[in-house]
Amino acid sequence: LGLGASPDEDILVKAPIAAPEPELKTDPSLDLHSLSSAETQPAQEERRDDQEPDSGGLGGKEGGEAKEERAKPELNQETPETKAEKDLKAAQKALKRQRNMYCKVVLLDDTIFECTVDKHAKGQDLLKKVCDHLNLLEEDYFGLAIWDTPTSRTWLDPAKEIKKQVHGGPWDFTFNVKFYPPDPAQLTEDITRYYLCLQLRQDIMTGRLPCSFATLALLGSYTVQSELGDYDPDLHSPDYITEFKLAPNQTKELEEKVVELHKTYRSMTPA
Image 1 (spheres, rainbow, N blue to C red):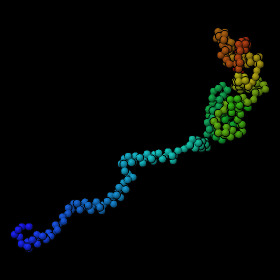
Image 2 (cartoon, rainbow, N blue to C red; image 1 turned 180 degrees about the vertical axis):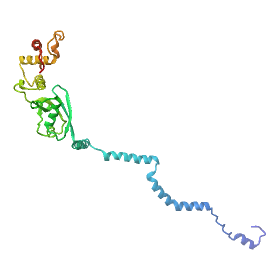
Image 3 (cartoon, rainbow, N blue to C red; image 1 turned 90 degrees about the vertical axis):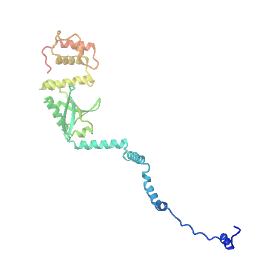
């Protein structure tokens, strides 16, 4: 305090009048920001919650698609048994819808005859087609066979439907002689005798028809005569007979006997 100050001044100095509180000034931008942040925070959190499944951008989408793709094979996966059963059922349905059936017949000269018949056709219908193809009139000696194994065959019943005899397998058959006539001379058709000879050769070669040496030589000479005609030394080499298969166990002795008999034939026709 100054030395010359009055008491009143001392009082004033000692107890100053409180200055008026300064006016609070607020920054509108700060208040707006503060209010906006406080009021909009829940909304922003809700938006973030909604966007969380898509977080990660493209990577998240690809991850979801990958999961879906991995899930698909599990739903569509089929066991081999299920697929095989479906294929079998589809084949059976297609077979039922099919009106005509494809047939393959191996003839006695090893050629193949192919044709189609109605799915309800009987054995005699197919046999008739084969005989017509061969111009064969004497049909009673012939038949069609189904081979269960290479050594076991079953004759196709001409009076029954083919589909009931093949049991779902392929319609593959062989054309064979079913009965040998007691006297071949009574046959009226040369073609009938020809196919009988082919069947005879086949049965001998497979061993189904055992023959003596003399019978093999005689039948062999007839075979050579039917194929080559009369013996001609200018045309036939010394070992020409080896080109023919005449017996299951063909020997040099048998070939010499066949040549000997072949030389004696003159103007003998295959019939």
